[in-house]
Length: 140
Length: 425
Image 1 (cartoon, rainbow over the protein chains, first blue to last red):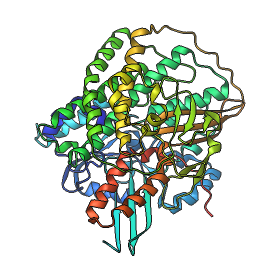
Image 2 (image 1 turned 90 degrees about the vertical axis):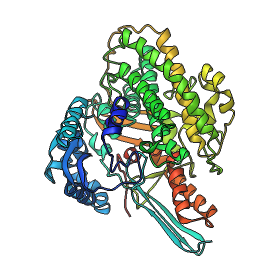
Image 3 (image 1 turned 90 degrees about the horizontal axis):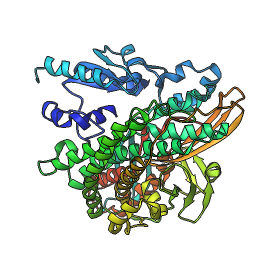
């Protein structure tokens, strides 16, 4: 969401510099293949999400965790800290929809190259990371 | 005529959050439509138990990135009702303004970035040609104006830190207020074109629909009575009694019925049920478009959103130009046991929060009902009707029509899967 808000000021620059390969919020077509940089938000709760994250990692030269959930799991990982009774209460759903035992931050599952923490993510830090990679991949 | 076919859409695009869809047709009849909300549950209902009342509105704000202000404001209202805290009229005005900022930004995102590509026959705003590029400028100008309005009041447009139980910790800066007024006036002219586009848009899906919305005396989304198109008038605190939760085994969100039937909440419901309360300037300048309502064309949800953007701009300008915000004494909050219900209109429809506090001010129980969960059953039923009406058409055509219709509802899967209260039998 913050990325969409950052677009208020940066869309017309980024449009020229960035080829958005996969961006479900803005386009239906796209595939995760041969990416220079993947920006991933959210924590990992299901086996399906874990698989997708690994697939993204395999297809990206750099992977950036954006937002608190992706960086350290919080607050999406609240269920990790539930009491045994509460855990029992939610167990059926976890089993039914293929959830893992715990919710994990991205770096517990794959190598993360850069982090942009904060909820919402810190805008300046995000721009810093983006600009770093624009240089690294010789876009600017 | 296709006798047997299946449609499976994995990862619906240009909506907030994750969902997929399965449709099965056998012998020329729709066997099933399964709208599967696949966003992972995060169990907020359980997570807020035992937490102090002051911290909970900011925590539930994290349920959603785009409408965090709605969760924050609605939960704050529920907590205040539980503690019998009456916000000052100044605090109420500030909440209206913050909410207007969210509506402008959120509706602009949906209309320009998610729905407009459908109208212009493009897959994405990223594919717009030179001529359409002006609309992209409009999109980000309008979104920014909404963003800046919420920021002026709440300190940030997403998870605004100044909003708290009882009041706001900061008052809007006078110079920034002037800038925001100028910005709102400037983008106002963009909205005429936006309204025109969705008025001229030929997309039609009509079906008998029950509409439900919280109706407010100044169309400010926050305080009023819940009305239905069947003529029911319900106080906020009784809304839950009219809802029936439906377990949908393949979806990570529950669905809801109103009075035992499917129904619709959102901008279309609000404009259908309460359009005479829109701001007078909006009513004057958009009279031709407002006359389209009441409407049962689901695509008019987009037109209704565009009209609401204008209202939010007009009412915000009026409030900001005519109010001198002054520092007020902090409300003394007496902690006690109690139950409270908050109902507001979020961008996508009626949002319900109920909290029970213990004598130390900790949450004993919390319950919330999300707009998208209320629309879920109706969306499925509409997709079923849409497929039945188009069985003679090409499968790709049907699939695209389904996606377009879902987008017109402006669903938010992230919100829909915040919690859970299910008994599996």
